[in-house]
Image 1 (cartoon, rainbow, N blue to C red):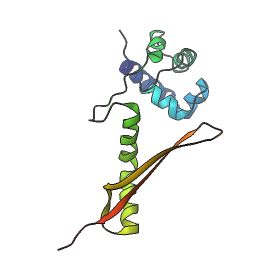
Image 2: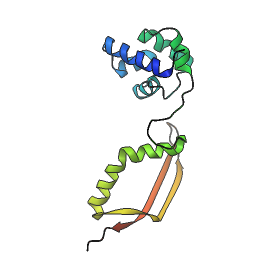
Image 3: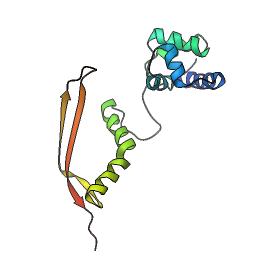
Image 4: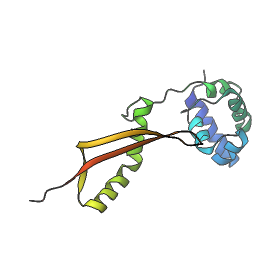
Length: 147
């Protein structure tokens, strides 16, 4: 029985052999490169018609079509929260944490933002492309002591 990991390996091999980019593949199946890559890595389920296009585009065995359309289990080998909303924040901190630290220290000095003297708001911002989630955080600046 073929797994998502098997299909991912086949896609990566076919991509390399064909000299295709993710953008090339995405154009052929009518999806964005980011989504196409994520789905090819097993992190999203292909709609059935896109799974069929991916099988044809990449020259995969027919069995891969149903595997691509299966709902994924979104887990990592790392210790991360598995609730989708919570792990998205984990991802943001993983990617932008060093940037936030550098900018805070550039503007305030050597220190941190308090999570105790802290407030946060979540608002909905209307957008014609789809409403957006706006998260605002405000924490007291705490400088490190020198002694």
